Structure formats: structure tokens, C-alpha cells
Amino acid sequence: MEPITAMLAIILGGVLVGICVHFIPASATGAMSAATGIATGPSMLSAGAGMAGILSAAYSMDSGLAVVLASGASASALMISLTILGGNIANAFGTGVSPASGQTASGQSMPGKSTKDVISGWDQKPYITPGTDGHGMPVQTHISGLIGAVIGGTGGALVLFAVYSLLFPILEQDAAFTISGIISAGIFLINSVLPAYTLVGKTEGMFDQKLRRTPKTLVSCLIVSTVIAILIYGAAVVI
Amino acid sequence: MSTESNKEFTSPQLYLIALVLGMIAILMIKFSHSLTPVAVILIWPAFLCGANAVRQVARYGLGTGTSSIGYWGTAVGATMAFTSQFINPAYNFVSPYFEIFGALIVGAVTGICAQKIIKMKIPVMIRDSAVLASSTAIIAMFFLAMLTEYSAAVFTLDAYIIYPLIYIAITLAILHPFNGSMGAGENQRRTLRLSALEASMTTGLFGLIAILFSEALLLTGVSVILVSMAGFFIFAKRWFAAVKEDTYEFAWTGYPPAEH
Image 1 (cartoon, one colour):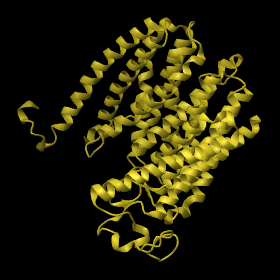
Image 2: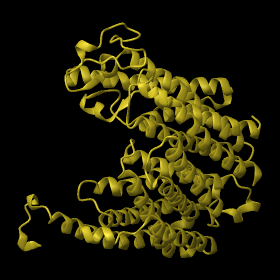
Image 3: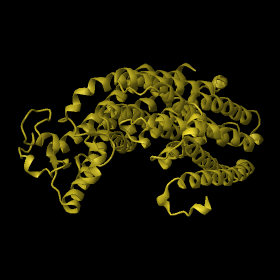
Image 4: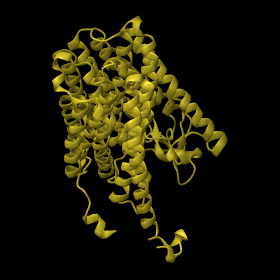
């Protein structure tokens, strides 16, 4: 990968990371089964998925860009899927509530006034505990999380590959691997916090009304990623 | 408590102190590695500055956790500090200025995006995002300098194995003081004292790392641990005194008034 292409890849990867956060269902109050989504902040959850993706992508670095991206995307998706499974088990068998989308049950989700899960077709309304905004992760939320993780994992892996391409000619392979990993993790964290500002700590994923705020995230992440990419490019190539 | 709030340090004041002393600390090590135990003391204000910046933005209610903002700040600062490893040795004179001011720029740009595009309406967002990112870059550059760059027997590139540790250690020391002091009675004095305590713990940890890292850093490591331990005991006493003082204001704590 040419240095200038690597710089553009860092920008694109950063933007993908920013977008992914809107798809991954997360809510701090989910810890008390009081809202739909995985029980933590969106940025930390996305960062966790991204780290899994970057770690996996690093193992396939010698196999070319396509395999690196696929590896990052699949590892992130696997991590989110297992987290959702764990959360649903805790909700169902620990708290005693079934997975249900609060926004869908109240007819305020993106698809419209329907109170049914978009994918499974199951009605959400009867399963909502009064006084809560849903709980657990129903099918549509799970699928949204998987899509988000694929986007984020791809973005993280792209940044990893791009930074590695910049460093490989000037550093030893081991050093280039490790430094690329930590820098791509850093870029992931930087871009995953900006969307959290727009989500205000809670989202049900792509069926949440907050998905409409994605353009703000996209522009913010584009600007921040561009500045970082220019500085990294400057350090690696210019000086 | 109301009188204390009037005496608070502002972010620019703390940043100016952290920047000047931090730069001196890094350049001192660059000049002579034997000055590291003294330089360690000069880097502590950067921890206070970072913790104060987290406090300033997090108390507005960010929509993300205090931990997230700590991770974000260090992500910017440490990422910029780690880019120093790509720089051609012929241009080494740009370090640490390039990294520290690079982090300041990225922090400010993120703050501008949050304020102008996302419309967060947090008046200190731009200033404190920049301060937070830059102060973490100062700390990261200091640890890189302390452990690697200016020691004759240790090559810069060996440092890559400790990058994740540098990252996480700085993050915890920056985000925890406010998180640990949070609540109705939170005030800057107690938060900064806890921050100073955690700063000394963190530098002590890196003293230990220095010993494990290379035989050439044995003396540096031991002296850094000793200085950090002295700082730890002083700051722990000061922090605990502040905690007790603030705790006495609540009748429900069970402390008899005679002890006050």
C-alpha cells in the first residue's frame, strides 16, 4: 500500500469505526435490565469489539488486505455475538426478563409504528416490564449489533493494515506489528467516543431513532481522522 | 466548601504548569539520564492537569462515561507520543514538541467537532479536550524517554513491548481521580490530591518496569521507585486528610464531633 493510500485508508477506517457505534446496541441502564442493549457504554463496547477485530486481523497480516479485513470483521462480529448471547442468558435466567425492544414496543423505532420485531416478527409489547425501556437484545437488535461489529471490525483492520504498511519499511517486523496494533486501537478509541456524544449513552442499534444522527458522527469522525492521518503520515513519511 | 470553589485552579493554569515542567522533565532526561529521579517529580503536575481536564468535561454529563473520556484522552496523547517512533533519527529534534502539540491539535479538533457539529453545549469542551490530550502526550513522552530513548544500552524500538502498559497506566491515573471522588461532595482539592497520589503510584510502577526492562536502567529504576514512594506517602496522607475533612461534614458517617 502506497503511503498516500495508507493515509486515506486510515481516514476511511476511522469513519467506519465512528459509524459502527450507531449499530451496536448499548445502554448503561441495561445493567439493571431497564433498557434494551448490552450493559455498558456504546464507546467502550464498540472499542472492545474493535480490539477483538484488530487482534484477529493481526494474525492474518501476511495474507493480504482482503483476508485482514475479513478477519477483523468476523472477530468483531463473533465478540459482539457472544456478548449479546451472554447478556441475554443473564437477562433470561438471572433477572427473569425476556429480550424485548423498548422503542419498538412503544412504536417509536425507525421502521415505524409497528410493535413487532422487524426480523422475527414477534410482538415486543407484551414482554416489556412496566417502568423499563426494554431489556436484553431481541433478534433485530442482535442483527444490528452484528452489522455494526462487521463495520467496526473492518474499519479497525483497515487502520491496522494501513499503519502497518507505513511502518513496515522503516521498522523491524515485530515492532511494526505492535506499534500498528496499539495505534490502530488508539484510533479506534478516538473515533468510538465521538459517536457516544451523539448517542448520549444509549442506543438500540440501527432501529433506534438516534440512527438519524449518524451524519453528524460521520462528519466529526472524518475531520478528526483526517487530522490524525495527516499527523501520522507526516511523522512516518515527511519527517 | 463554597470558599474552596473560589480557590480552584483553572485548566489553563494547570496546563501551563504541566507543559513547562513536563517539557523540562523530558529535556532533563534527554540531557542526562541520571536526572530521571528529579524529572519524575516534575512530571506529576501533568497527571494533575489531565485528571482536572477529565473532571472539567465529565461533570457536565458527556453522554459517555468518565472512563470513556479518559480512554479517549490517552488514545490521542499516547497515539501521538508513539508516532515519535516513526520519526527519522535525523529529525529527532522535533520530539517532544511535535507529539505534544500534535495531541493538542487533535484534542482541540475533537472538541470543536463535539461543540460545533454534534452541538454538545459544553463550554469547556474544546479547551479541556485539548488540555487532556496534550497532558497525556506529555506523560507518555516522558515514560518513553525514561525507559528507552536516551539510555545508551536500550534502543528505542525495544519500547514497543511496553506500549500497552504505558497506555493503560496513564489512562487509569487520568480517569480514576474524578471517578473515585465523584458524588455530591466532589471538589477539586480532593480530586487533585488523589490524582497526585496516583501519579506517584504510576511513576513508581514505571520505576519497577525500568528495573525489569534493562540492567542499564537499574539505578534509574531504584531511584524512581524511592522518589515515587516518598511522594506516595506524602500525597496519601494529604488526600486522606482531605477525605476525612470532607467526610466530617456529613452527620451520618458516625464520626463523633469530638474527633473533628
